[in-house]
Image (cartoon, rainbow, N blue to C red; front, side, top):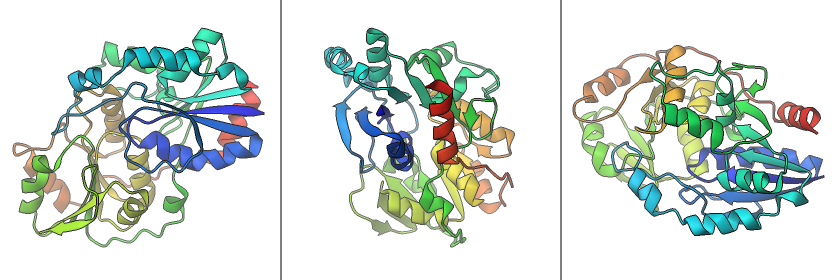
Amino acid sequence: MRILYAVQATGNGHISRAHQLYPVLSNYGKVDIILSGSNSTLDINLPVKYRSKGLSLFYSQCGKLDYLQSWKKTDYYQIKRDIESLPVSLYDVVLNDFDYITAQACKLRKQSSIQFGHQASFMSKNTPRPVRKSALGEYILKNYAKANNYVGLHFERYDDFIFPPVIKREILEGKPIDQGHITVYLPAYMNSCLEEIFNEADNYIFHWFLPNIKEPKISGNIHYFPVDQKLFNESLIHCHGLLTGGGFETPAEALYLGKKLLTIPIKGQYEQQCNAYALQQIGVKKLDILNQVTKNEFYHWLENKNSTDYKIEYNNYQETIEFILNKFL
């Protein structure tokens, strides 16, 4: 069996998931990977056969989606060439983790595909949304990487085609200990936005993971780290709490480890707003933005106990892959 696995490289969650799933998929046949996107920061230790800059999202310095930069950095002529040249018809299975290039190539060649990942869960009306829905956000979730079939991942099994989160093996096997520090991963916030706020909470140590940091360094109560999966796993397993965006994989891992969690969804990114709303339903604290106006809410979160004792289920990779292949082949 020949399998094409399309991995979105806007952000790091899709790549992290692919690291766990690729070995399992390889048990069922020859797997080729297309990596599409241009602003991930994780090392890509995967045998990538096709590479496209695709469509990527970029952020402002302090917590917002930067639509202008995202538009300027997109080469639409190259996207057209990538769609036309991707040989999807050579494959028995096309598994697409929310990649536009692969979805359009399948449409062009009338090739069946399966969208598999977090975004696929939004094909269900049962998947949580905020009270104020975004018509544009809903359209993007349902049409950006359109497929013939959908298998979703989310915090809970909101529907019969939605499975639990893929948790990294290092997290599953980790022994969580509270060493007192706060792990921070906020890819839409740069140093200047939050340093003063962290410095004022000088009775806490912050492990801050930033894309512009090349080597670990310490300044006062802030320990700066590059975005490195091994270093991040260690910090998360041993942290007191996690401050992160409204992504999916990282909050899921924090919940699995029983860590205190504060989420700040990226402004303008509807999927993150939906995730933050789903997390609120199980007791997780949410801030719309972190700045001098809202910092006291952040300090209150630091000083208080975990707001949820929710126990998350984790994904049985083998079971999920077998579900996909048995149901759709």
